Image (cartoon, rainbow, N blue to C red; front, side):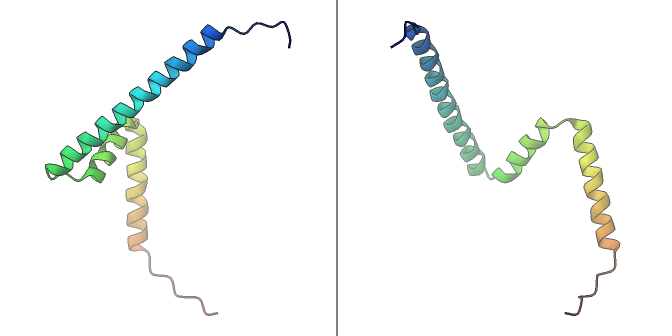
Length: 88
């Protein structure tokens, strides 16, 4: 063995803090599931709620640009003539 000393107390402190954070994250995840279940019980569509949450996290300008492009592409696709199936 070498003469290097490892600060065991400091390592234990980091590990315990991380373990506590993992426990808190798991508890928060359970609470989040309960809120979604409550919303579903009140008749709300959970997929739509998740989509709203996702959209609210996005930058407004980026979201507006993406929605504009999506609309443009959809209109272009709808007005295009259907392609003929290629003969094999």
